[in-house]
Amino acid sequence: MQRLGAGLLAAAFGLWGQAAELPYAEFAGPSFSVHELAERMPGGCEQGARPRFGDLSYPLGEDEPGSDGRVALSGGRMSRSEGAAGERLGNLTVRLASAHDLPGGGGRTRFWLVVLHVESVGGSTSTNYQAQVMRCRAGVLEEVQRVVWEARVPEGRAAPVVAGDGGLRFTTSHYLPGDAHCCVSAVDEVSLRWEGRRYGKARVRSRRIRGGETP
Image 1 (cartoon, helix red, strand yellow):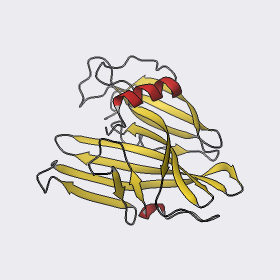
Image 2 (cartoon, one colour):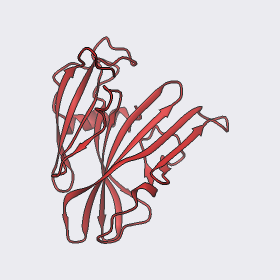
Image 3 (cartoon, one colour):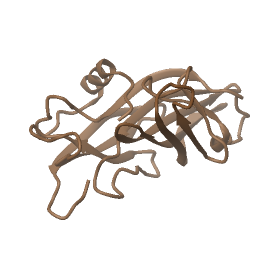
C-alpha cells in the first residue's frame, strides 16, 4: 500500500478512527487513513462548472515515484514504467475510478469527491484507493481532505460506495497477528459521515474473511 507516512497514518487513525474489533498484526495496523490537507490543484475552477477530473494532475502519497509526487491523468488514466533510467523498476498505473458531487458548501463554494485507483507493480504488487475531497472556492480548486485505503480484500469490495448524502463506505484489509503480507485473513468495513465540508469520524466493523472469499 502506498502510504502518506506511517506516523501520519497512526496519528490520523487515533484522531478519526473507532477502535477495531479484532487485533492487528504488529507489522500492519489499520490499512486506511484520513488526512486534512490544503493542496492547491492546477487550473483553478469556474463557478457552477465541474472540473475535468479525468485530465488533472494529482498529488499522491509520499512513497509514490515522481519528483513532486504528482501524476497527470489524460482521459482518466496514467500508466508509466519506472526504472528506465536506472531508477526504480516497476510500473505505476493510476485511473479515475469515479467523481461525485457532495452536498454542502453554498454561494461560490462547491465540493466533490474524486476517487483514484492506484496500482504499483515492482518487487510486489500494491493497490489502493485514494478518495480526495475537492473544494472550489472563489475560482481556486483545492484538495482539502484525503482518504486512503488498501484494496487487497475480497474481489469487488474495496471500491467505495458514495451515498446521496455524501456518506462514504468501503472495505479494506485487516491483517491479524500471524498473517503474512500476502495473505490477509480479515477486513475492516469502514463508514465515514459527510459533514458538509469534510468527513467526520470513521465507524469500523472488523470481521474475519469467510471460507470461499479470496482477498
